[in-house]
Length: 331
Ligand code: ATP
Ligand code: LTN
Image (cartoon, rainbow, N blue to C red; front, side, top):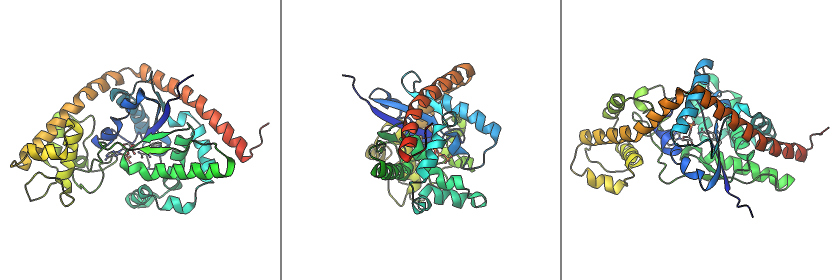
């Protein structure tokens, strides 16, 4: 009998070069490829909920594919594709929107944050973003969704939608669960350590990018906001130092206890230098592989084309079932 592997789906927006925060989450994805059936999508339709420059979006989409492969996503074992290449995402999104209460959308943290950040453009897409995300997930009968902690609420909404739909039409969708690695620390901004480090942050000093050169990384860590206490320990009233500790933990695998012991009696200068070096070492192999891949556009495009065809075949079947269930006439 054929063994049925768990289906895993996750997405990432091509909104810029990805950060150490994204890396903290994405580096867990390749490990799932052996035990699970993995599908990873570059979600360009989600990206336009915030205004993008078309040429940049195109370039960043291909760059994101190269970065994901450089991080270890293997196109032979996983499906890697661009969301807008599979029309069923937008199609299912419409249907699912009719199964999602308006109030659930307005209480999403990300909607509140992004509408505060872009008060001049609080568009419908920003509000319905989680419905499209639910469509991404449910189209593939996903069991688990590996994401950072900031996306938990969205995955829970996808669960609610699946359950509501199943409640009306029978077991159509697999009910997905978030898979949040305990070691996928939520990396915070280096300048405002109570806010998450975000790709689209306008303050470059706040963000360490995957493709930053070593001297840039060092400079950003030297400027990182800490506090006046001068001891290296994790505490809620020390968000800057705690964030640096978790970054050091991501790059070295050390626990907070080990880090506190290692830097007992030392100052922030020494600690910041060590954190920067650990990041530089962790990123170096990914950067090298990325540069190699980006030079081979034909290979990347081939991977994305093949990925879209494989994703589309799965998505079409699920969409057809949904259309039938809700009563769309098939001729
Ligand atoms: P944007 O700034 O455009 O909103 P983002 O940096 O939040 O983007 P996404 O593309 O939305 O990045 O997220 C990709 C993945 O990275 C998600 O699984 C998300 O949970 C994770 N992630 C994003 N930021 C962080 C962070 N600071 N720490 C840990 N994981 C993160
Ligand atoms: N909303 C996610 C990106 C995303 C996603 C998904 C993640 C879009 N669709 C489906 C998991 C599953 C984010 O902002 N990180």
